[in-house]
Length: 315
Ligand code: SF4
Image (tube, rainbow, N blue to C red):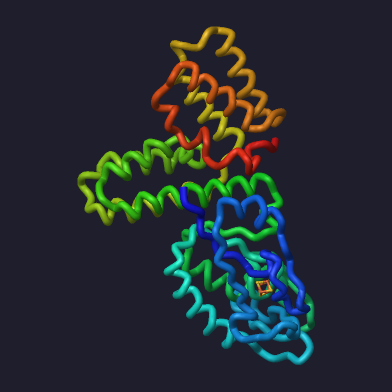
């Protein structure tokens, strides 16, 4: 797989673009995830023409449509930032991004819970950074996260799974040749989708079953919407246990009673929160190899992202 293209707030790469001339280098993003990702840096405040160093800013007014204002001299930068951001998101369309990692707590780049100050100078954490809002409205189906949330192992795993899936899907889109490509992609992603949403698993299954009735363009369009929607829904131990039991069904004839017992116990322990997901996944992968199970062998669910990222290791 080629590297995955992600937008990122420039200061997270260690560039000295912050208002005080500093950066917010995040080593996980550059050194670990960076091995699989090509970043497209975006610093809204510098790129809209404000220098380094510069006066710091915050959001003021209505949390739904706040103004971006410098804190000391009260210059209103809203119109300047909005005009630039609209132009920048149009440019970013050419980049074929699979997601964006925003800098948390920034009035320009933060994706959620940004402080918005009322006329008495009291903050409520209900805002969205000015560029982040315009980006997320423009690319409403793209996976987005901020570096703070990515420290949470579950959110990190979910985001990385989404960008890897989107990248695989984009590779199918590049071919855009036949319905068979969608059917093949879906076959490999079925259990991954099931782990996020049994409802989407059913709906997407029905869509693929009537692939021949739709134009190729419509099939690709609908499939992408449902796929991205399903991945927005979080996996849970209950949903994963359901998938693991489902997989076990494929070995029913081959597993010895000892092996069945062991697998059931491991799934139970995972569901109870005593062991991480990687344990039942590893055991099932072992049986897939041992019994050469052709359908499960191709399931992305068993291998959704590189082992080196050490995901699926949390309980
Ligand atoms: S938070 Fe955004 S605007 Fe601020 S320095 Fe980082 S990239 Fe630039």
